[in-house]
Amino acid sequence: MASHHSDIPNTSAAVVGNDEIQLPRGNQVFPSDEFLADCLMKRFNGEPNPDHFHDIDLYSKHPAQLTEELEPSTDNKWYIFTPRFKKTLGTKLRPDRRTPNGYWCTTGVDKAISVEGSTNPAALKNFLDFYEGNRPDSTKTEWKMHEYRLSDAVKNTLINSKPRGDMTVRSTHCLLIFMLQLFIVE
Image (cartoon, rainbow, N blue to C red; front, top):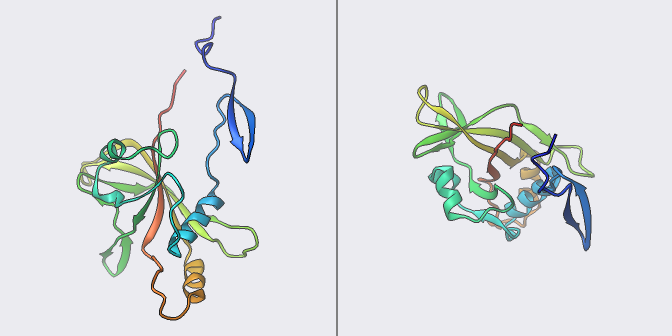
């Protein structure tokens, strides 16, 4: 039986440091959770963004609008630093993930991200899906997002390590990776 993948190479190249390595088809190289937590700590301290990371209000537009305006950081993925707004729900503050024509909804529990040499998690990661419309009549879309935010312990450590009066800390930002995940059914 002929394979419909005959025009796709069995390996792909990835660059690690100055070396090019061959990986089996289907393997992809993405920044690790630890690397992204480190980027978030640097952003929190006011350091510049890494190349191909955007700094915008993700919640101001529909994901499709953002993909038209921004170059992807990698294949179908956009790395974005965005303000993290909160709303009052009863007596609690909750993340406000509404957009003009939909909302982002969490799909699970926070995953702790630890970095080497630390006993506390450095950051937390959550997964979200985008829904068009308003609850309860909304429709789930194919847009997915990973949200990274610093843990309270790390934020407090970073704030306390700053000289008194230094206001360069950006405590309301989180790092979002949003993507359109397409699955090929064979």
